[in-house]
Length: 264
Image (cartoon, rainbow, N blue to C red):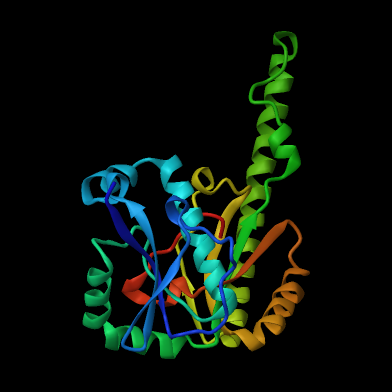
């Protein structure tokens, strides 16, 4: 079976060893491929799955995509623990080592520019959700028995109006809170990115997402950033704040990487 080269990230040379048992996409261990002062972290993948046509078909398979994205992320996480990686987009594949080196040489100045900007920095993700009221979930969807239909119908409509009004109030508070939080965190971080709100069906997260943001923070300031988020979310009853990270700086690498929401 022919093996192709899957590329996870480009880094500057680093001395710390990756975990001995670390595996990546298709179960193969990652290795370092050095070229002109840059390191590409690569592993071998089968052509039967990662050549252009089968890869295009696999990218439409959500189960396959989820497993592959998690394996990709596992290697990026390991790199983030020991260096500052510039993660490449999921499914970056070349024919052989020579193809990877040609790519690195062609984009050398772009890689160096972005790596200089990201050096010593990590990404933190902050999401704000409107929690669903327990009474809303338990509310019946139709009026009561026929013998009490008139009264039950009025009560039902009244409760529905109250629920709608309460939900609109919470949504407004959440939107205002999210704006203030983003302003505060943006002032702390070096850069910030606003992403589209997550679709609950795809993410599996409870509640309605009203803020989906990423912040570029010096690794040395991460503890202070986490404390700042903790302080701000104490004043948000009925609103849930979710902090994730530290991640490789996916949101700040421009054209090199695409945002992945799997396990992030």
